[in-house]
Amino acid sequence: MHKIVDIDRPSTWTKWHKSLCFQCNASCCSMPVEVYVEDLCRLNLASFEECQDSLKKVAQRLKKAKIIKSFNLRKEVFILEQNYGTCLFLDRNHRCKVYEQRPKTCREHPVTGPRPGYCPASSRKSHKGRM
Ligand code: SF4
Ligand code: SF4
Image (cartoon, rainbow, N blue to C red; front, side, top):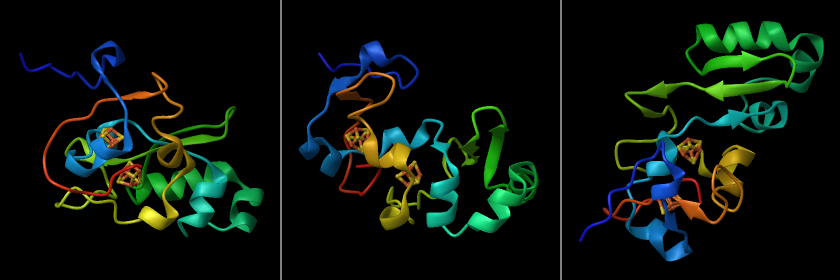
């Protein structure tokens, strides 16, 4: 019987192995992505100077540009915006457009994350998602 995977329920996820990513439609790129100042700088979305000056202003600018969805000032963490339920950096072929500069959250998934070692893998064609 085919296992039903629900992205919002980590208990339904699959034990991860790198080979899974080659046949997956990048389901993990539908999850909220936490982004930090160093990620914004690596992605050329903000400069260190600008971030040192006022993270609130950076957040306002990126929100207006529809790059981030929300910002937590206390934790200094931003959440990336999505397009039709997937990360704004995912292209129509399920590939990450900023793979080399992708956020730390993406680099570490699923080694760390909601259920370490497991991910919401779904089979499809080859792509380059978070891992
Ligand atoms: S880590 Fe992401 S791309 Fe790789 S198999 Fe899991 S859900 Fe798919
Ligand atoms: S790997 Fe790329 S497309 Fe996927 S969530 Fe991260 S930044 Fe977005």
